[in-house]
Image (cartoon, rainbow, N blue to C red; front, side):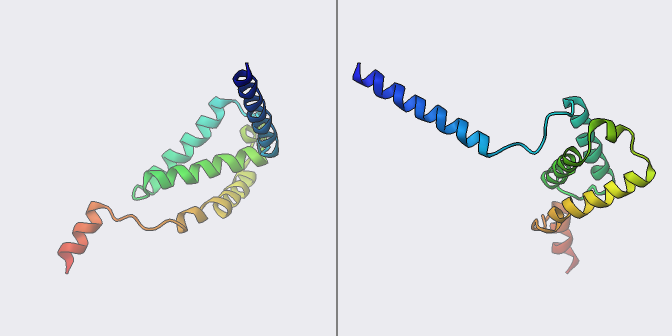
Length: 123
């Protein structure tokens, strides 16, 4: 009986502690974007980066596209995203570049096989 009581007390402390911790880490997003729209935003970003910058390593592209999607979700509603005009799209693009593309500069260069062989045989 004493072991069950101790176990119950431990479980209560763990649950209460985790609930308090979760409340301190409030989410930046209010859940107003449907999952489908979030996936579409992320995929457009990823495909665009893959097409325009094929040398960009995949994990780095993922980080930048995660950032792009997060910034859009923080600053716009789903309705605003679907009604962006040319000027607002340009402003959003500048904001995304300023807030997210810095991630590209903080990563060490990745030497691919092609770069390695070029260095080996060009000397």
